[in-house]
Image 1 (spheres, rainbow, N blue to C red):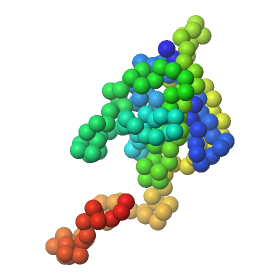
Image 2: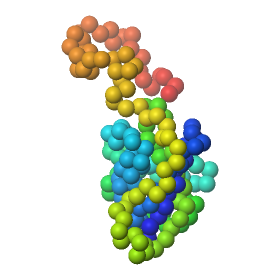
Image 3: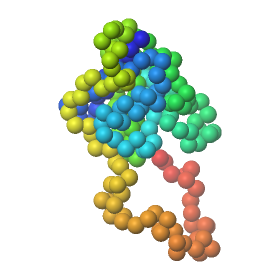
Amino acid sequence: MIIKFRLISPENDNFVRDIEIYDDNSFLDLHEAIQASCDYDPSIMTAFYVSNDHWDKNEEIVLQIMDEEEQKNSLLMEDTPISRFFDAKRQKLVYIYDFFSVRLFLIEVVNVREPGDKDNDLSFPICTLMQGIAPQQIKVDDISEMGYDGDIIDEFDDLDIDDIDYDNFDSIDKYDL
């Protein structure tokens, strides 16, 4: 089966992408197709969330496990076929493509079809509709635009851990994040 996903952006009404992909492809393949269609930096942490009709986030499908305990129920994109969750129209996903600035796409299945003869000449996944400019994604290169020009390791060269006053450090658990 070929599944057509439509991506929209809550921050840009003119943005639409349609991506067609085989149902036996992985979420990693879908992730890479989305990143390519938006000209994004694919090294930034991302995640899919299988959603209901109200866009509530359910199962998490991640690019990589960052915290074993916190993400013990998360699935890896590369190990999870699309067919595990999607086989009919109107099924939904939330795709967080930039955790640092909390940017996301809302994704819905708009078509499910059998492959035809015309598909033999195409290389899937494929972006079949590209409308509007993708919302800005914070890229690694943008760090220098925010005022930082050096190597991040240089920032720690003069740090003396013996001079840190740990008594004045509050636990991160005390912050309402």
